[in-house]
Amino acid sequence: MKQAYGVLLGVTLLVGCTGHAGLWSPSPTSLTRVGPDSFDVRVESSRGPFVIRARRAWSPLAVDRFFFLVRHGYFDENRFFRVIGGFVAQWGLSGDPRINAAWDKKNLPDEPVRVSNLRGRIAYARGGPNTRTVQLYVNLVDNPRLDTVSTFGFPPIGEIVAGAAAVDSLTWEYGGTRADRKPGPDQDSIAVQGNAYLARAFPHLDWIRRAKVTRTW
Image (cartoon, rainbow, N blue to C red; front, side, top):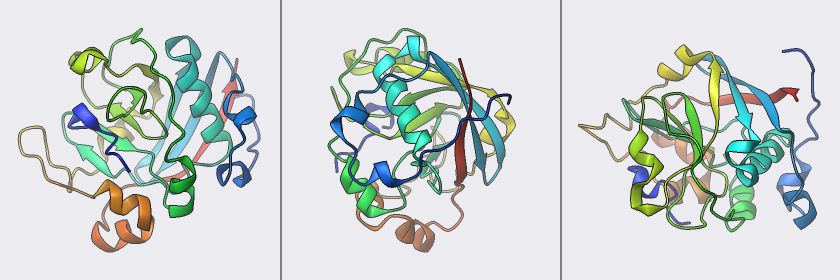
C-alpha cells in the first residue's frame, strides 16, 4: 500500500447508520452517490468527543466519500496512527485488514484547494496525484504550505467546530514533533495486520470509539 502521507511528512437531527456491510465490497453506485451539502459528525475518541463539520462545497467528491464512510461505520475503532505535535494528526486505516484491502485502490480524482489548511481543518492524506482514498488528517496548527505543496496541495473537506481540546490532547508519543520526528507505526503493517499490530507495538495510541452523523442540511 502506498504511503498516503506523501509530502505531508505525509445535535438536533439524528441520522441512522447503515451498518458495516457496505465496507466489504462497496458497489460503484454507492461510491458515486452525492451526499448532503453540509453535515456534522460527532467523533467519540479516547480523549473525548469532538465534532467535524463537513462542507461539500470545499471538496465535493471527498466529502461524498467521507459521508459514505461515516454512515457505514468505517472510522469506528480507527487509531490515530500518526500524530506529529505542532503539525497534524492522521487516521483512516482500518483496524480490519480485510477492509483495508477492499479500499486500497478506491482512489478519488484530485480536486482544487478551495480553502486553506488552517488549524482544525481536515483533509485527505495522499501520496501523489489522484491517490486520496480513506486516510484523513487534521491540522493541529495553521499549515498554509499544504495548500500548494508539490504543486497539488491538500484540499480541506471540513473543520472541527467543537471539542478542539480533545484533538489537541492526542498523544504524539510515537510521532514526535516537527523538530524531532519519530518513525511511528508502519502503514504497510497497519494495512495487513490492522489493530492487532498497533495494539502490540504502539499500545498508547489514541483511537476513535465511534463516529456518527448527527445533523445534515
